[in-house]
Length: 304
Image (cartoon, helix red, strand yellow):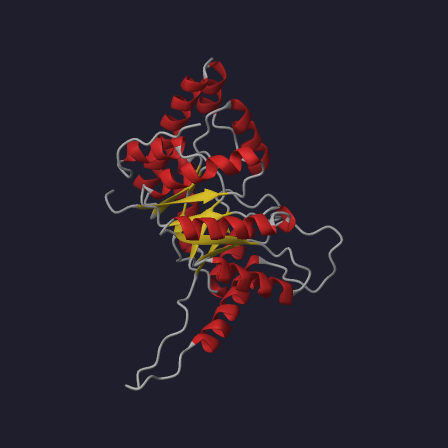
């Protein structure tokens, strides 16, 4: 397992208190040596400016690459292209391209799928690279344009909630690969055997890009309930029961960390190329998981 990479998801803080706590969490997370931080983009583009601010903050405060989430929320292709340029200017060096929820009242003319968004991101980058090249210097050696940002896409281990057929999610992922996606990150799921089965189906479908599983340490019954509502996944009964009967927050934290570590180890044993950890902007649980996997330095504790 030495050499296994990991990454973290962050979201724009919603309160002054969470914004004040973020720098300490960011420092603790960066100390584990992640490959990148991903920064979410609000439903229907609702947190656009906050997302830009967080991309800048991560880029300024750490030496870690920033992956900016981007959705098809704009009403026009030109508007989405402008968002790509702004995120690149803010410090994003990677993207996660997802379709996202449709914007209520939006008119036709925008992007209709994540595959189209992947293509647009690459077109914008090609344009910037062309205009960013330097003229040859006195020695006749020209400079190079901006490096190409890698583009990730979402994968749904047990199918997209809106899928009408059993293989729609595989068709969609293959289309995103053909459009130029470099890797896929799974949305939440709770049974490790589902990952191996999905990767096997994807490979037989012609999907060759790395498929990185998402891991969430769940440390409260309320959070588990909410995650199940959002994902539509089957409940992990052992975790649900253990969290429900444990009376203390400390005990629930230990249960959630231990469960996530076992889950992540099973995914690595199944051949996962890396781990993407959902943090909810806290370092304690995800760092504890990495420690148990031997993927983080000495214990790090946050102050509140």
